[in-house]
Length: 432
Image 1 (cartoon, helix red, strand yellow):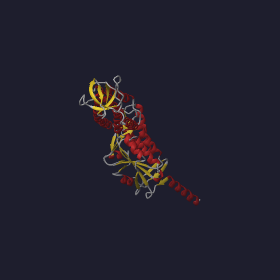
Image 2 (tube, rainbow, N blue to C red):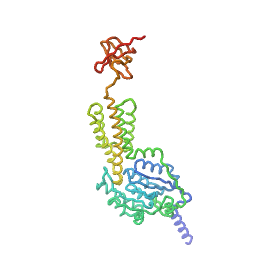
Image 3 (cartoon, rainbow, N blue to C red):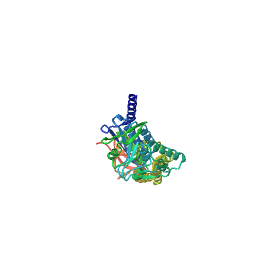
Image 4 (cartoon, one colour):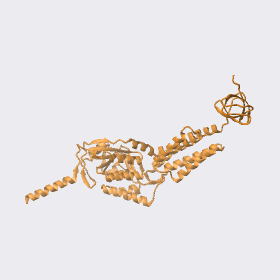
């Protein structure tokens, strides 16, 4: 009987040890993933690559946040990656003075353990749609339930989670710790890993005790693909690419043969890729109208009125495309105000520069050719000219339509002896 009791106790101890898998601090490798700036498809690709490439090399993932928010679909996909991870995912709002607003708060709430550096903020999760805070009941209810479910899963304050969305609640590091929204306050990732040492987390149904003291912290670098996507996904850069691309294309159409049309087309495509969608109806319509006005200006004499209208139309269209994406995004209103201001300033500079170039091009096209002295200029015949048929002659690098009272063959040297409207009267110079 005594032996049976010993066997049962041994089995119970083994079961307990199996349930609480302890990560040895001497062997722990922590992958440090830095999320900064606007959360975009590039951010999603960065996180996905960190969790999928060489995942066996890391025991713990640490995400540091410094963001005002970003794209909704990218944020939700990042949350799925965290929830499906078989390794502990920790989160720290870092460095001091950083913020993890809107989409950043959603990511923080999804992580198994979260912390904040001093003087950091989280919250303000009301969605922004079309450049303005959304009160759509369907969307708000979804986000509230999503936030609450994340808080419930990690044992965090569900009331605060709800208020993040419904009341745009914002908490500093002390308040977040007091209201049990985060577990730790730490000045840097190393201090954070020291403080979470010994804490229990539940990952994929398994209880793990972290032993992260003395762990190896490895910063996960961004692949080249992510770096390129990051540049293109920036709303300001993609807007500038669209604006410069369209105007370069128009400039190329006014001065064909220098490759500007190709460069403009490429920039337009890159700008659209960066936006992550095909331009919405209003923005596209304004862009098309603006382009049409500029082309019309080239072939008419409206004294710049059409060009000015076209540039204004293009500018508004680009601003709408940048400021009112069709997909919901989780960002603060301050971010939207800032991006619209930046895009507007950039558009004014770009419009002024390209407006000047287009004006000079149109002026050059409309300018009548000029000869210093008529008659008296010399040149060479390009076509066969007879008293009954006109042809072209080359004078000082310009082609001129010409007629003659005698037969002139191609290559013969000629002299201008008169002019009838825009047609020159020439005669052949006898070869010595």
